[in-house]
View 1 (cartoon, helix red, strand yellow):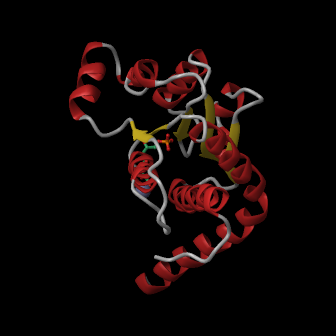
View 2 (tube, protein in one colour):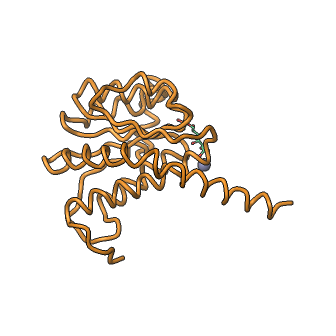
View 3 (cartoon, helix red, strand yellow):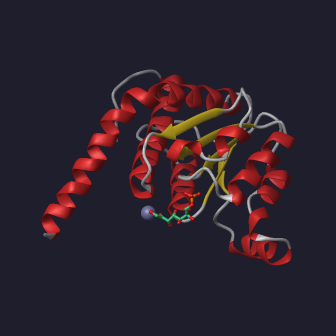
Length: 199
Ligand SMILES: O=C(CO)[C@@H](O)[C@H](O)[C@H](O)[C@H](O)COP(=O)(O)O
Ligand SMILES: [Zn+2]
């Protein structure tokens, strides 16, 4: 019955979030530190992902450049998923695989962070972006699931891997969104202190 099916989604999502609280708090804290080091020394975050993860990249950039729950100075983030002219030109003239990598090489500076979001860890466009970020001496914060896929082998020791312990794309994405809010809150709390949220 449909209502039961819907309730099961809520239960499964909540279960995974409970499990992930313990499994992911350490890498998420490391990701906050990596992003803080970057933005407090004039760096920025370049974010990318496909499909639902493209929406996640944009969601993060909006809350970083705009604000999350508290008033604070603007912080630098660019979602590499938003300019349809750039995306179609690169996909048409080179290949879809290059859509983010070429933007990383164009915009990325040493000390910037690439926020690479892929539930499988296997999307060629995201793996190419990671390689481009390394070529620019950027730190990578990777959000994945399903054991991390090829991403696990593509990261450097100084990168951060937040790998959601689940196989299903939708469930992984639900934890990725929570992770992005933890990153925003973590950066705000380190910059402004631990006071209560105002919004
Ligand atoms: O949002 C969803 C499924 O929930 C889809 O749009 C999904 O993001 C797309 O199939 C992506 O292409 C999957 O790529 P990835 O997460 O494996 O890198
Ligand atoms: Zn989705």
